[in-house]
Length: 152
Image 1 (cartoon, rainbow, N blue to C red):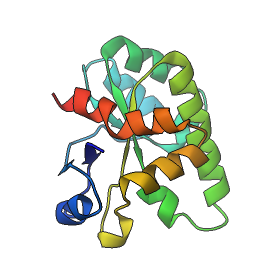
Image 2 (image 1 turned 45 degrees about the vertical axis):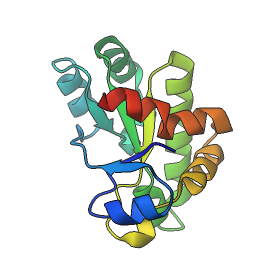
Image 3 (image 1 turned 120 degrees about the vertical axis):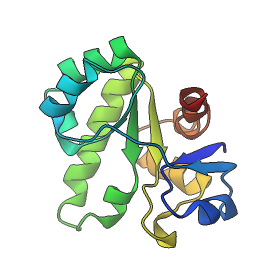
Image 4 (image 1 turned 180 degrees about the vertical axis):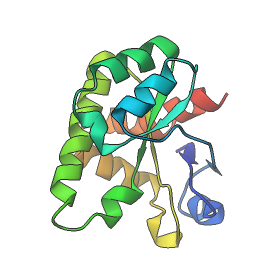
């Protein structure tokens, strides 16, 4: 697979696990309303997923599609969520990914790794994405074609 965007300082670990490249990229971060306002003024930005995106996201998705933004779906929050909060977080990811697929808005999976245990191999990333409702092909595109196109 091509790239683990935002692998943090774990670039060597990402490459060891099978990624062709690992890069750190800045992302727009914040809750739904704050991000929606910022997206209206920027083009081609990477937008870090926030749990609030799964609710009332019509304006957010419209702004993203119109301005060519890509959503970053970090794995680290899923890995570090408490057992009590993980189901709700997974539901938020599923809901948002479903809306992105339906509206053909690009997204990428990233590690946002803080240590070596947070870095997952391409196969593990695809498996997690499949748990979130994507097909194998959609998951593979989210870690290869989409990030490659965004960074070029």
